[in-house]
Length: 184
Image (cartoon, rainbow, N blue to C red; front, side):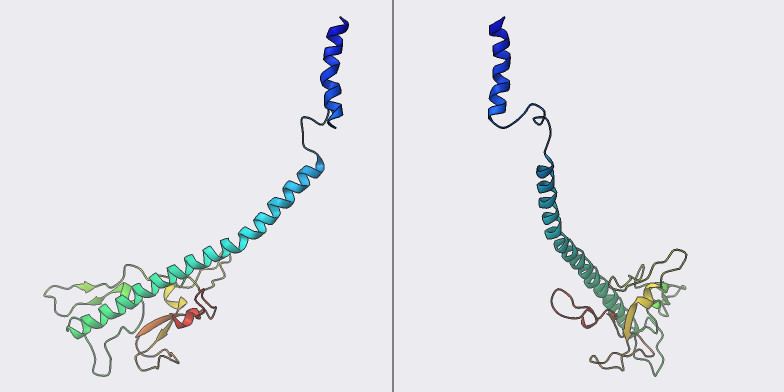
């Protein structure tokens, strides 16, 4: 029996020589947990700017797509006017009077049956427009999120007018390319 009890004590003696007691062997110490938390905090701090940059690039891509869609619709409207499919008054330049006309459509005067020409299914919102979405308060319509430039205004100083020749973002923030969004 002495051999059995000595053999049982031997592993405990070996463990205590290595500096570990059977009590601490099954869990982590407080210092180990603090080190892990500190490492995770450093990693999270490093990841946040990357996430913000990713979100910014995604919004910039959405802005590019929206500007391209609206500008293509404006060009298609102008082409329909030049082709004589949309009525044009003498003092007009052939661009739509409002952005909403691209979605609501205009009558095709060349069609034999009453027909409406649509240029957009829906008007995209400016992704850079900061709308305060408060519960119970309606967000601005998509047309009001864009800045518009009439045909008569210069590209350096866009002004609204009787028609919509071009659109731009109202945001003055800088893009990742260093150019302000309202200059895209």
